[in-house]
Amino acid sequence: MRMMQTILALLAAAAFGAAQQAPARAPGVPQNFDNVEVHTLPAQGNVYMLVGSGGNITVQAGSDGVLLVDTEYAGLADKILAAIHKISDKPLRYIINTHYHPDHTNGNERLRKAGSTIAGGNVAGDLGAEASQGAQIIAHVNVLDRMSAPTGQQAAAPQGAWPTDTFTGNEKKLWFNNEGIEIIHIANAHTDGDSIVYFRKSDVISTGDLFVTTTYPIIDVAAGGTINGYIEGLNHIIDLIVPVYGQEGGTLVIPGHGRLCDLGDVLNYREMVTIIRDRVQDMIKKGMTLEQVKAAKPTFDYDPLYGSSTFWTTDRFVEAVYKTLSSGEKKK
Amino acid sequence: MEFFLRHRIVRRWLLVAAGALLSLPAFAQINLSGVWQNQLDEDFPDRLAGPELGDFAGLPINAADRLRGETWDASLITLPEYQCRVHPSDYASAFADIRIWEEFDRNSQTLIAIHLHHFAWATERTIWMDGRPHPPEYALHTAMGFSTGKWEGDILTVTTDHLKEGWFRRNGLARSDKAVVTEHFIRHDNGLTWVTEVDDPAYLEEPLLRSRDYVFSVAGQIAPYPCESVEEIIRPRGVIPHHLPGTNTFLKEYQQRHGIPDDAAMGGAKTMYPEYRAKLKGAGVQPK
Image (tube, rainbow over all chains, first blue to last red; front, side):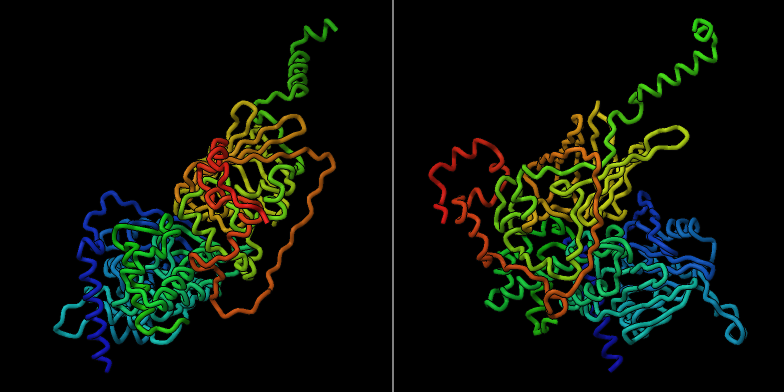
């Protein structure tokens, strides 16, 4: 059963990977980063946001070391490490992957090698120095399934990039740099292996691609993503946020792509996604085909904000919503 | 007296004293500090009672924003997380009193910032006057935005970006987070005109210009504005009130009540201009 799950996961990953290689559908991993700068924006508390060319990276730094959420592209690793060293000279200990897509995990191997795992006592004695080599990579088990492959088969990512510490339930907790960190799994949203990371003392949530400000929600249907899971993820993020006043301040949110946010931004996005979901759902109930739904332009009023004709096009978003709603998925 | 005038030190002191008495406008051309009372005689129904549903007339909105307005449901603001949503800085001038105060560097007496407190939701914004750059795009956007100001003669001109999504009118017409707002604060003795120009590449066909008037209040006080969310309507988790396109039966009420043709009520840049009236002759519906 587990083998079957892995094979299915690999097939799905291969399908999404193939989509990424096709220029008309999605960009592959960029090859040239000469003109890319990695910018650092302090969020609050121990947490910073790094902005480069892939997904945003979240950095938590303190006396225990450095923790990253996602790693962008391998080609940016030196610039990312330089940016981290400006924040802290402590060793990189943990990498958390919010999902498996290359724009968030392609830098795993390079950055992991630059870090080290906390090890000592019997562990270091029995396993030698290797026990502490490289930072740990934490992710939901489905991320590992989609990046790895059974022996003899081609994996979607090199072994050195795979998660080293996976979890299967709804949550994994970690105490690091004197604050509690919740890694919360959201099922079948952007993919089937999504996690959001909540830094409880700094009061910052790193969402991965469960929330972005730059496009419509990217729903990787082949990898288990669904529109209702995505909305549930947004509602979960909203549940965690406590604003200072009105809809602003308090808990800050680092999206997978785009600017630093707070409650108001997530509410606006949740409002948009829910309204479009409801419109497409209504059209499906009326028996409209996908082409008819596209022609009806259910996203028309939000296209100036999130519409795109490249990579994650508006049509692809509508297709993903239509497919996951018409595949028998119940409205949550 | 002649002795004093001849004495170098005394001459210097007199010059300093004269300079102080003259209050030369070296750094802040006009003093805007104080409490200013909003004058509601312009666009009164729109500003205090609130606009009617489906009244988009005179606003240069595009088709996308019109659909935002047509599908908007006022029940949205009964959601707890929406109840204390503050007015964005470009809409705040529509009503209620404000307090303005200046912040100076203690040593150089250089103007650093002008602050503005608004009665509604007790919002406060800072207009930076020290020439600092605007933050990068990936920085936080807020309801107040990031503002920098400069004096153009006696007019304070302010540029604001990094705004969260807001609204042009409180009946569902959204203003996007891509908007840039230019404001002019013009003082005429005890009067203040606050001109707002919104450039929104997402939702406007042309810039939206509005002006609001205030009167200086010698003894003005601004009350606190606490806001606490409550559950007004019990709903399933995640429900967002809205109308599906083409199903909002309330949209026509405004047109029928006032005899406004649909084309005019639905707004757009053309409805801003006086010559549009000529095109409307005979096109109206009879008010009920």
